[in-house]
Length: 175
Image (cartoon, rainbow, N blue to C red; front, side, top):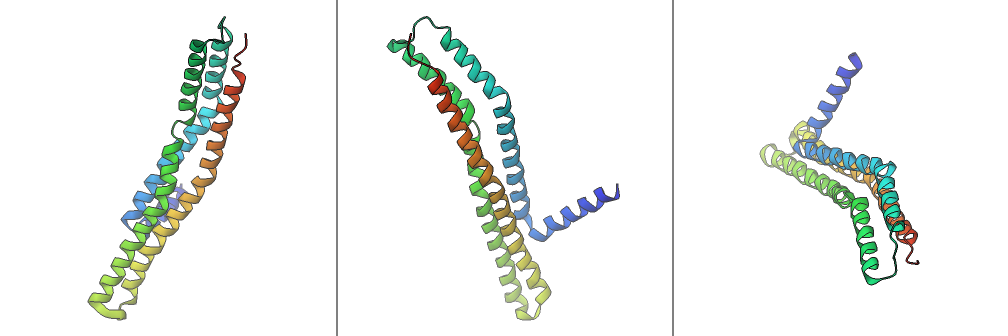
């Protein structure tokens, strides 16, 4: 139980070291990972079931060559595509937002450094160091958050495109 208390204190100290912007970065990273995990879970079972249901519905049609059948096929693919892509655009936005929030942390930290310099000159090294840590920690956190999401959002995007293309190819127009 002591490790839990120590971990909580270490996280709290780190959050204080980075200033208020670090809290926003942590929230964005948390939400980004919730959406990534949701997409990964969706790809495991619900997406496969939806594709199988669409395929079964299409194969049960007696006629598949008319303009009407073609439009029904396009609608099925569109619904599948929308469901499969889902929150990937939101994940991409959060990946792009992480470094921007890190840059905001850099700017606010440097403003603190300049404020200390204006009030006490360059003699108060301790106060300047606090401002520098407020500038560098959010930048690092924003970059780490973005890097952690870039790989997975790329994999999710490729997988979604592959599944959509596979469904399009499997819904034949003959018969």
